[in-house]
Amino acid sequence: MPVFVLSDENVFPPPNLAAEEGLLAIGGDLSTERLLNAYSNGIFPWYSEGEPIMWWSPTPRMVVLPKNYKPSKNLRRIVRKGVFDIRFDSAFADVVEACAQVPRNGQDGTWITPEMQEAYIKLHQEGYAHSVEAYQDKKLVGGLYGVSLGKAFFGESMFHKVTDASKVAYHFLLQFTLDHQFELIDAQQDTPHLRRLGGSLLKRDEFLSLLDQALQHPTLKGPWKSDYTNEKGL
Picture (tube, rainbow, N blue to C red):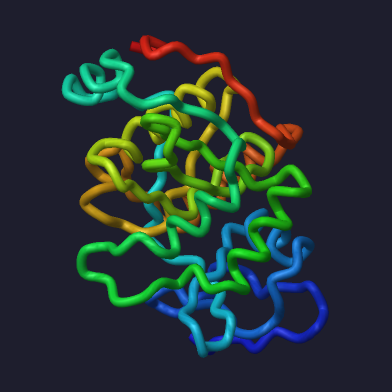
């Protein structure tokens, strides 16, 4: 399949025309309007510093269905201990920056470029991007962020500076999506970590069908708030 070159017009080719590895198009920009159009069509940007913007629609796709989420016994125990203070949308920019800076095993550098950080902060300011933060002793030690449209949440990245901090943040994200009847969490890429957190693989057509259903609902624009206790959902 050819890789499409985007123009200034906010239009994407159909996602089923993506190359075998998932690359669909290059170019364009990271405006709020283009990003929202991309996500609503099952497309997301992913590229490194110095590269053109690359737009992806991989198959299979890693997805978490909130209704099927079951925390492990170990995670239940950690949540009950209450070692982390969990907040929503209290430090979005800090979470994005931490996701870009905290080293990851097997990765050299980051795809969360300054341009990407700026774009997602704008999405957050418009009420479409959200973060979940884990604090310990009033310090941000873990968290995640992503984009919300309809009843779908598109996870972008997570980080931890303290063991289990991101897992607990993820747990409370799942509880939030359950409480608000979200239908899917798009985790994008297949990783052992996401499988352990309940992710499963769907073919592109299956994913796009679920996404279409989820987008029939109004978007819960931010800021998100919660009053969860440590025992919520356990």
